[in-house]
Image (cartoon, rainbow, N blue to C red; front, top):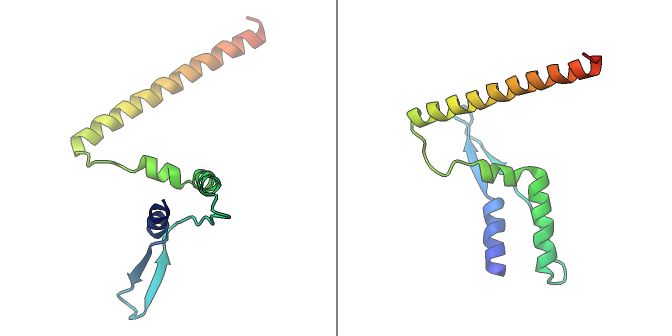
Length: 108
């Protein structure tokens, strides 16, 4: 398990060199990462702490929302159209619900 933890920490602490074409100096850009210390060999506590830290920092959301495959342009259009229809339907329902609640409050 220690090897897996080291591999995960190396993955999260990856440092990428970024070169600027105008300057000959190299800058180091550190990617987002989380470090967790394992105290007294208590790996379960460290994992729960890491899970909490990942959830609060948003890394978990980035990993979940990362595309798992390439989408064709036609597929993207279809998905965008469906999302638009869902959003419009939701806004329409919200408008109707608001008018019903206003009528109830007014006593009509």
